[in-house]
Every structure is written in structure tokens, then in C-alpha cells.
Image (cartoon, helix red, strand yellow):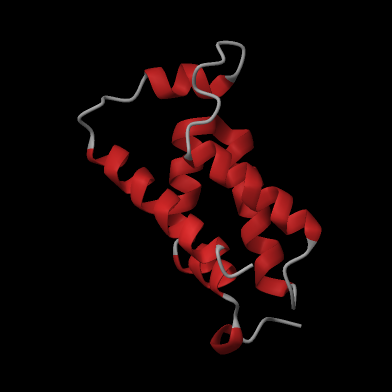
Length: 109
């Protein structure tokens, strides 16, 4: 059964209202696999009546990706993808705003 978005908890509301930007940021920072992972989280949040432990792990992974936790690990794709971003690009500010919004929304969990 689809979720009632009027009673959607804050993390789900944030994810669903920023789905396109989150998918774009995931693709930019982590490639197709990261984008697909975010898309699956969005799909789960559309149908699940509550935040599950699986969703919490996926939210942790999204926060880690947006927080650039692995860009210094040269064995990970995040390092390569982050190095290709122009530091003056407006996408940097958008990623920071997404991370801040995600952290604020997760404070409700």
C-alpha cells in the first residue's frame, strides 16, 4: 500500500522531496551503483509504513557518500569521481545542502 505522504516521517519526506537531487549527487559522487542504491532507498520509502533497519543502513551509506567520507581512499570510486569535480562548481554547494538537510531529517529518527 502506498504511503500517506501527509504523515510521512521527516527522513522519508526529505528523501522523497529531494529524490532527483539525491540521485544526481549519488551519480556524481559514486557512479551508477550509488545512484541505483539511492533509487532503491527511494522506492522502499514510497511503500514502507516505517523506517526499517535496512533503510537506516542505506541512509547511513547516503550520508557517508554526501559527507565525502571515502574520497581519500584511492581504492574507492568516490576518490576518482570527487577528483573530477570542479571545486568552484555550484554542485558542491548543492551537495552540502543535501547533506545538511539529510542530517537534520535524520535527527527525527
